[in-house]
Length: 72
Image (cartoon, rainbow, N blue to C red; front, side):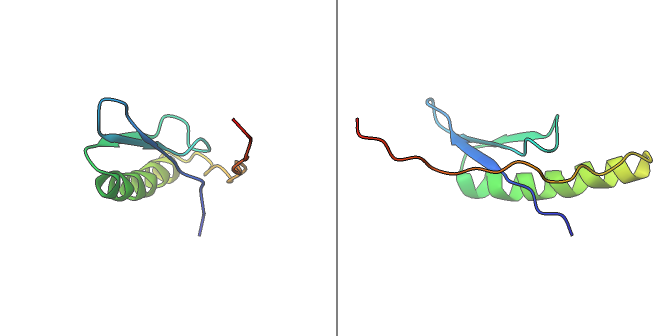
C-alpha cells in the first residue's frame, strides 16, 4: 500500500482542486471538496494502475508538509 500527500486548494472563483506532488501529472478539479476528495482517490488508483501496466516504477512518497504559524 502506498500513501501519498494530497494538497487541496480552494479556488478564488469557487470550486476546489487537488494534486499529489509525488505523482507528477495527476491533478483534479471539482465543485466541492468532497467531490475532489473522491476524484483524487480514484485518480491515484488509476494513475498507479497505468504505471504498472506500462511497466514503469510506482513513485515512493517523499513529500511532506507542515503548517507554520506566524504573527501577521
